[in-house]
Length: 144
Ligand SMILES: [Zn+2]
Image (cartoon, rainbow, N blue to C red; front, side, top):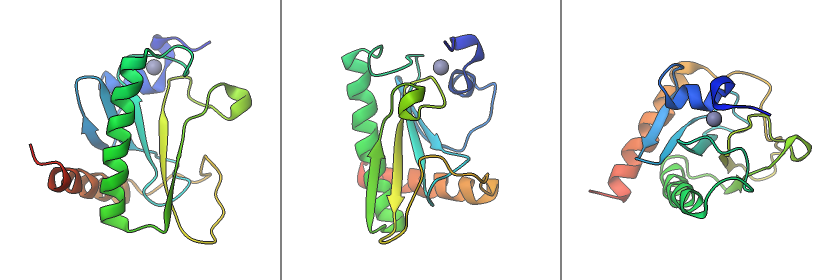
């Protein structure tokens, strides 16, 4: 069982590891997956450590879901993908590799197969550009 102390996502939330941030709210953080399964693959996580759907409070799950919907819209506005897979898996048997609740946003291209985890690390400059573009689209779509 992963604890907060050795959780990669908790260390990102704490600022101890860098990320290509798309959005941060009081409860939620969104950033680019550094091993993208598709171009624009983005993660949305609660800032507090919960392992799975069985642990996360409904209120935190709602906060994550609202951010996921908004970022999905921003990704669509920026990349105009043919479709989008939104997936959340629980437990190693289901394919969960980081034991901190997270939602994957996966822009999809017609006819292109996909695995949940990419095998190659993406170019950091490209991820940074995408994160900035998505963040700008969020502001366009949801002005304060
Ligand atoms: Zn964590």
